[in-house]
Amino acid sequence: MSMGSDMYREQILDHYKNPRNYGELEEHTFSHLGENPMCGDEIEVFVRLDDEDRIEYASFRGDGCAISQASASMLTSHIRGMTMAELHDLDTDDVLDLLGIEVTPMRVKCAVLAEKVAQDGAEIYEGEREAEKTTTE
Image 1 (cartoon, one colour):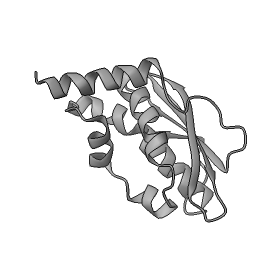
Image 2 (cartoon, rainbow, N blue to C red):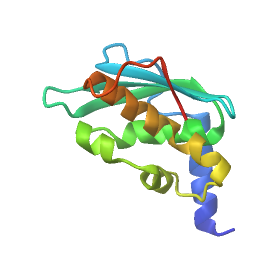
Image 3 (cartoon, helix red, strand yellow):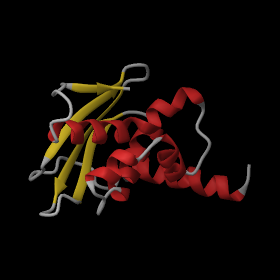
């Protein structure tokens, strides 16, 4: 294992043990809940938009494996300042790049849960999709 891989693994553990942006955002524009029933991950994402419909702040709460929680921590920081279109344009590769490690096929759903929850919440907010209680990944 390379020194770079060790650094990213440490970063993931740090985000898991000390998540950034954790907790319910009291004054949010929208929120949405999602789960990965295969491993029990659950994440709720909260987003506040500014006057120009850019993401001013995002937070999350939930429980799950180190990959899902670290990914949510990193993603909520990464999406600040994005437009809704930029949020929708995020894909699996973007999230995996954020994590910086190779994720096994079984863990990809853990890694992208927060991304999918944020995107689904945005689509519900924008009226592009009917309100669902949860996103299942």
